[in-house]
Image (cartoon, rainbow, N blue to C red):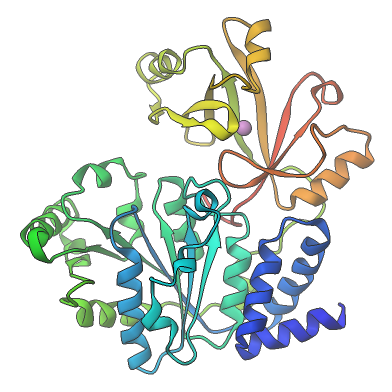
Length: 409
Ligand code: CO
């Protein structure tokens, strides 16, 4: 390991702000040379992985998560805890900035001694976690913090990913969002340690309380006291909430460096089948077929203009199908549909632990990579590469780097 990495690692372990910031920038970088340095750093940090308890605060946009986190953070600091915040920001790629760039959020908490706050881009704006989130958590978790708060925008897949990355999961909802909870991935209620209905203030005070009791009634009797309402704005219910989260955090089993996650496989070999992508000229009709004729669970159509497709996910117990309809003039699947007018299998996607190791592996065997050979951010917000079908027995193969070891297993 280079001396520079060792110096950086020591800075991180000591909680030096500049070192923390530099280390996070390094793990978020997609440049090959930075990936090598990032891997060395993560390996070094795992040796002495810190004691921080990871608390995930997730929920839909507009639920007031940032204000709530700031208020909780202030209470933790008052109780003598050292706190850091990683805010995974679904909007940063759209605005080109970060949520903390405007300096209007968490300013009071950011001023407290020993507190470190960091926004982290997610790549594609979908709210899914970036492939680097886990490494960013390892960096912050190695610092001298008691609590590491991870803020994420809840969006189906991301929720279970978050649950796999944290010790305590808090789900924050806005009043009246009954449909939201219905639409959330099955199991999120079981995964959350606490469900918080925020904004019990002003005109939504009553609604927040009735929403909280509605949620509570939908849970088994034993879990009902896991639903609380509060107002991050007025501060009502926050002392109690902070105490309950602290109790959960302090009783969470201590993490051992080796238990966080097994090391990533650097061989570049393929892992699980992530999805099979099926091209169709009419994604609504195809979705209806999988839902009504075959009886599968299908998502709502989601336009992804930056990828030139509208997608529907068909969730199967062991994998997923992605139905793709061309969107826009330059859709990457238009050519395919010209040849196969009734639609057909477009590509398969396999997971790899390390996208660059996988690229190097197949290249050495003479397999061509489509495009310039650099990973791009795919529809799930994770780095992907496509292998040339002529070198893969006629099948277009997508390789996607895993977001988090252990998720969904
Ligand atoms: Co795909």
